[in-house]
Every structure is written in C-alpha cells, then in structure tokens.
Length: 88
Image 1: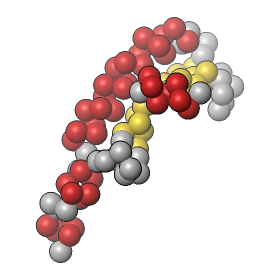
Image 2 (image 1 turned 30 degrees about the horizontal axis):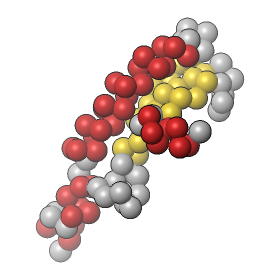
Image 3 (image 1 turned 120 degrees about the vertical axis):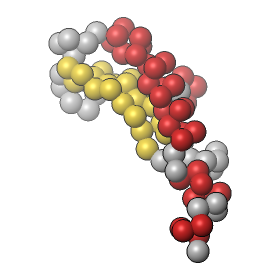
C-alpha cells in the first residue's frame, strides 16, 4: 500500500481511521529526497456523501496542490541556508 501511494503521489483512506469518514492526502516533501517531510495536504469527507470514486477524482488535484506547496514552502530556503535571519 505504501509503495502504491508513493507511485501515485497520494493516498486514499476509506473508513480506515474513523468509521464513516474518508480522505485523500498527499505529501508535502522536504527540499531533498533524503529530507524529512514538511507536511501533508488532505481532503476529508463523510462516506455517506462521498463514494470512493470521488476521492480518485479529487486525488490529482490534491497531489498537484502538494507539489505546488513543495515549491513555495519556506523550509526550502532554510534547508539551503539562504535565510540569513535563521542561519546567523
């Protein structure tokens, strides 16, 4: 399951953590492949209104938002040492 999530760029949970709830989430990665994750972005919804097909429809949008956040995240500058106020 983790390998599939890595390959897809997102993960889907359907009543796994909480009965009646589902979610799609994507990783906000660190600046380099070996850096720790910065966070995640997700959409959660009640299963009564959200078929699993809808999560698959939302998934590319969630993954794209996570990619964009990776590009914008301030930690990039900190990890590269270019934030003078933090690296002093």
